[in-house]
Length: 136
Image 1 (cartoon, rainbow, N blue to C red):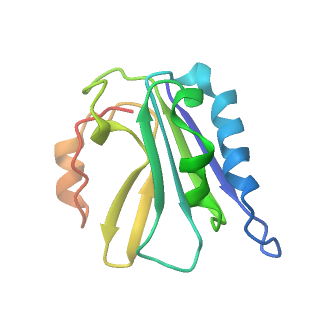
Image 2 (cartoon, rainbow, N blue to C red):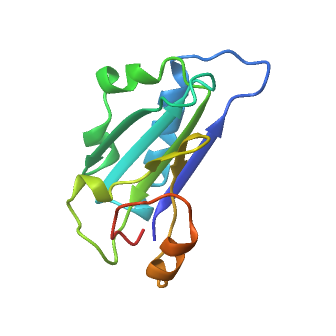
């Protein structure tokens, strides 16, 4: 069981430093869904090959601070994830979501909840590689 959060600014809104704070508040509200790690990814919607990322092990309040959240000042969309592991390595930073993958159309950020039981089969069907053994 994990917690997933997505935020997209309205089309006529301008980026504000407050968006990251709203995302962290949302992840705090979802803390009961996962307490092992948390991650946030943000995009300014302009640079297809650049996402801002903050990830860490532990509780939301231990990971995010004014300094690392300042990198999201131009973000217009954010994706967040709190992890509760049921498989995979608990403390490995490469298991902390959201995952960011390079594709032919630019970067893609992915967060999911649950265990993928047919990963080997599915990996052969997709055109890009996600290198993790994490469940959630």
